[in-house]
Image (cartoon, rainbow, N blue to C red; front, top):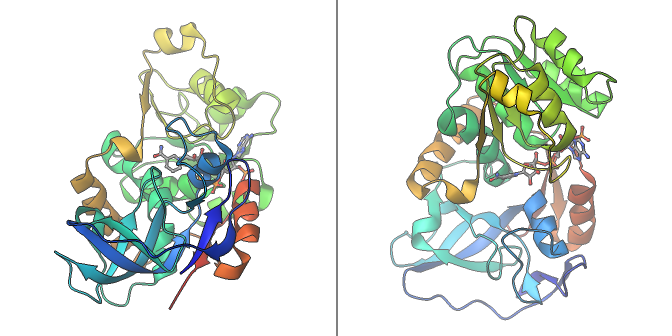
Length: 320
Ligand SMILES: NC(=O)c1ccc[n+]([C@@H]2O[C@H](COP(=O)([O-])OP(=O)(O)OC[C@H]3O[C@@H](n4cnc5c(N)ncnc54)[C@H](OP(=O)(O)O)[C@@H]3O)[C@@H](O)[C@H]2O)c1
């Protein structure tokens, strides 16, 4: 079958041939339609993911939308989203196997690219504000990295879930304008000299009461310096750096709550329930994500676009 294989750690995946996967008991064989690319895919292939990388060569892709061909518990022909994880061969192929329990049947007529875009990235934006530390009515929310997919979903999710003022922060000006169009009351460029002051001014009042943080590094430190007493900061990623030199005076003096969020640590039933809730919101027009679809043959180019930060959810079209 056609598959995008990472030949060795540090190299891009290229279209090639791989043996068809053999379905084990309790697994489903899925015909793949769409595979979104995520920072985790790039990091696993580069050998930078804390959870490690599979032995090479391996089929890339940690999630997919497809149609069930064979399964013990799902009807053949069912459209599903599945999180394949990063421990073994992935989903960037004509066929892949995943445990039946990992499959989420999708409503009829669901757009596979949208369903994919809302998977790993959508959930990482939605679950912090909806589940890990639910946004409180009227809260002032600062979203770092609101120029990426995770941040953009978090921003719109916070708004839907009752936030008061919502401020978007990021680097690329055109993507900050997109965040404004999708509901941010104010935007802050991460290029500001005094970032903490800029956050405080944009948020007003005592500063942000809730910080959504896919970046870590200096932006998270500045957000903590700007934060209101008792504020919560939920860390989702480390796009700006793996370390952040927080000042004790900020964390202790304001009794900040710094929380971590990981899709991998979230119970499966919560992931699946909230995924369908998020998909429902997006289908109804309450949450938008910008998607760039790329044909399977151009997977290496799609990979490069994701690695460079496309600003859109890059989705590889495999079949259909
Ligand atoms: N915890 C989880 O379960 C989970 C799940 C999914 C993703 N994540 C993490 O969440 C983060 C965002 O993912 P995504 O899907 O939104 O990625 P994305 O769409 O590629 O967006 C990347 C974001 O990071 C920003 N960025 C990149 N490098 C930066 C730097 N050096 N300084 C400041 N900002 C920087 C980009 O800003 P500009 O576009 O303005 O340059 C953009 O906002 C990643 O770190 C990812 O690994 C975590």
